Length: 266
Image (cartoon, rainbow, N blue to C red; front, top):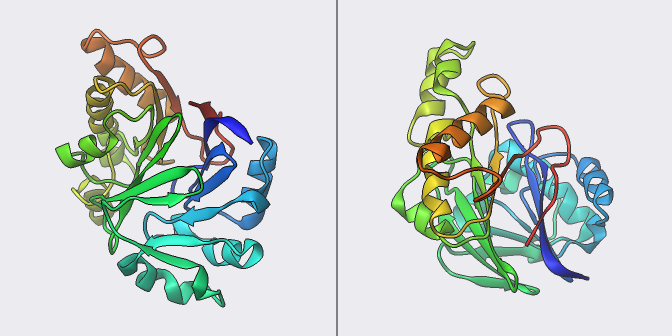
C-alpha cells in the first residue's frame, strides 16, 4: 500500500500508450496500447504487479491505446471503464472477453475506483468519442490531456488545480511541414482534431502553472516530427517569457516512447 500517489507513463507515443496511477491500495491503468508482457515488465521495474490492477480506463479506440485491452481483461479479469461509443467501436477487436467486466461511463460524471475518484471529459481528436481523465486521490489530482487537436478553456478548466498533468507535445510545426509525411497526414496531425504542437502545449503549461500544477509530463511525442530536447526547449522558453522557470516553479519531464518514464509522486 502506498501513502502517496504514484503516476508513471509505462509507454508513450504512436508506438503504444499506457499510464499507471497508484494510490493507497488502488491501481489504475489508463490505456493499454502495448503488449501485456511489456506492461507487466514495466510495472515490475517500478515495484508494481499487473495482477494488482483494479481497473483499465480507455481514452479512445485507436490501436496505440487499446492493442492489449482484450488480453489484459482476459488475463487479469480486469474491469474496463469506457464510454459507450468507444466501446462499440472497439468491441469487435477485443476477442472473447467477459462483458460483465465492462463499465460504461459518462463524460463529466465522476465514478469511484477504490480510493480514487475519476471523471472523464471530451477531447478534440479524430476518434469516435475521445476523452481525457481527471483522477483524484487524497493526495491531489492527476489529469491526462493527450491526443488533442487543440487546447481550449474547457480542457484547461478540467485540468485546473491538478498537481500533475500529462499533456501532449506531439510535434514541432517546422519539422512537421518539412518532414516525410504526405500532405493529407500533415493536415490531419495539425488539424483541430489531430495532435497538439509544442507551442500550443507550452501555452497550456503556462496557463495551468497559474492554477497550481506542480509537475508536467510532455507526452505522445512524434518520432518523426519532434524530439524530447526540442519539446522541453519550446516549453521552457515560453515559461521564461512569463518569468517562470522549469525546475523552480514546476517540474517538466518527457514521457519515453520505448521505456518506462521516471515515476512522479504526489
